[in-house]
Amino acid sequence: MEKRYFIILLFIFSISSSCSQQNAKKYTIRTIAFYNLENLFDTINDVSKNDEASPIMELKWNKSFVYNDKIEKLSSTIAKIGKEESKTSPAIIGVAEVENTNVLRDLINSKHLKAFDYGIIHYDSPDKRGIDVALLYRKQYFKPVFDEVYNPNIYSDNKKVYTRDQLLVSGYLDDEMVHIIVNHWPSRRGGSANSSPLREKAAYQNLKIIAKIRDKDKHAKIFIMGDFNDDPTNKSFKEVLQTKHQKRTVKEFDLYNPYENMFRRGFNTLVYRDNINLFDQILISGNLLDTGKKEYSSFKMYKANIFNKQFLTHQKGKYKGYPFRSFSNGNYTGGYSDHYPVYMYIIKEKIMN
Image (cartoon, rainbow, N blue to C red; front, side, top):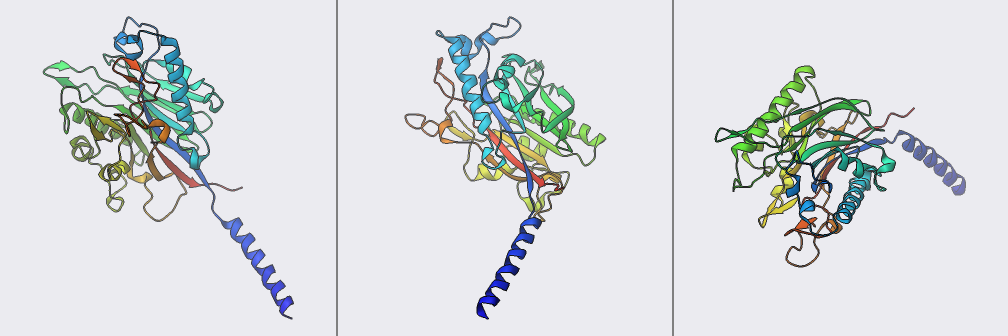
């Protein structure tokens, strides 16, 4: 009798377990990332730019070897970003400090990225050093429908500051319209540390782009990424963009910055003049934030992170714990970049047929 009772219970349990597995939700996971590639220049002198001042052009020895080695290292890194959970390379990655479309082609056609079939959106900006921002995207996942660049039109002492454009790309990530703004704000050269009118003006340009997007799509889902040359607590973020870092206070039209909490806990993406900074960030519009209801019928941010793996970090010496950069004191170090990449996972429930 006991044996028969046990068999019945086992049968009921197996049915219950089977139903539970069928009802278990499955999710689509995509990685959105940003990476400052630290002076990814080719070895050809472009007379229309000041590219001869780039680190690779100033080298006295085998420039081709350095260029190919840097392409190898950067592409292998990009292929790994977010792979732990998405099981593949980023669906979308914004990049900064690239010279031209040619270097981006070499990057995506490398052995580490070629199979992922990335597309490129790039414009030459008026930056004096000839460095630009760009967007790389997996054609399998993202279909761009619009792209445009906006110059911040920044002036200092009545002279135009020739800085990087801000790139807007709109398109369908899977079946959802999203908008991505890629930034590389004016640098801290000249001692402008905790606040700078130049970067605040760059932040105002972002507000104008956001307003333009929302004029056409009130409930637009927006990602703002870049090397901002400001930390998450600086005026450009807290007063101009009015970013929020506490989820419970975020409304649909707010901008949420997950990197502010990381910065407050001591995390960084670079070291500048021996100061720890978190200049590389990804912000999202409030409607991309998981509000705690765990409703993922459309894409929501799952979590954000810094890709600060051991191989990207100096392991010994004077710069132990710093990002393992490519160039230092006019020499090639064999490193990757002076910035860590940043990334976030966005997820939604997978439609099961």
